[in-house]
Length: 331
Image (cartoon, rainbow, N blue to C red; front, side, top):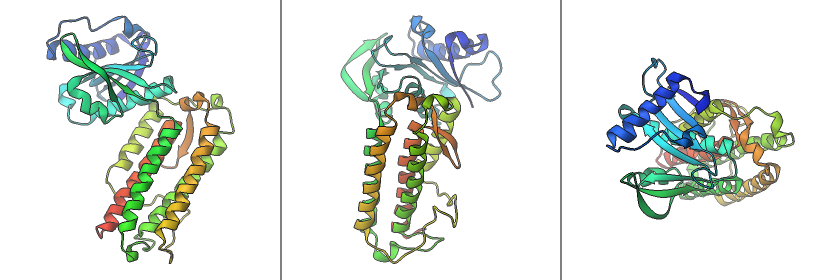
């Protein structure tokens, strides 16, 4: 799949056809709704869309959405005209499209929430993406709709998500038998998992602190490529797939020890996180930091600030899966 993000005037004739053909197939033909799909907002919007790798001229896009700047549909930026090719539905492409659209909104208009006009039958789908309903439902072109809003997730909100994941780790650790708290180099115990996370996060926070001493305008702008790196990394981490330690025997590989004090380890971890996020809020106060690549992940490559924080949370959730396997007696 090839992804594109362009203004209307930057689209080629074939790309205009691909975008509008899919929108017409979905919003006019499939939904049996006679209305003017192409409107004046298209000229002001960014068009995010996906095409097959070998798409031929004259074929529709596989997925499309338009990103409407603030002050046009709503005070906030908006995501609209969300359409997925019928054959691709159920494949996860719709989820990817919306996650990419949220990332793009945050790159272009950091510090602002996102408001959408959602078809009511998709409320659950948008809830899972962080949107909440606002007000009462209404009819739009004869179809039940409702406004939904996704608040800006600044550093403080990522801190809260991170702490929630940490508490999930603690809940599992406290239920582990003592012999499962320390393992071996090859098969970690529960507290080795926590030590690995603390070491990894310490490296991330140190990197960000150093990067934050510079000028964001001197860094590469975040864009489609960094969005893809972030999306792939986070998606892989939050799955229950097992990963090999990327630095076997090195800094991120904890040695087994005799320590089995869960409360002591958790207090140390939460204290380190509190200090780290307090520093991040001060260092990255300017919204320009959300527009650039700030972190070079050793496996994924350069990431935006948003995806760096998303990676940090997803990394903990990845190891929640590992702790559950330890609790079940599996390595």
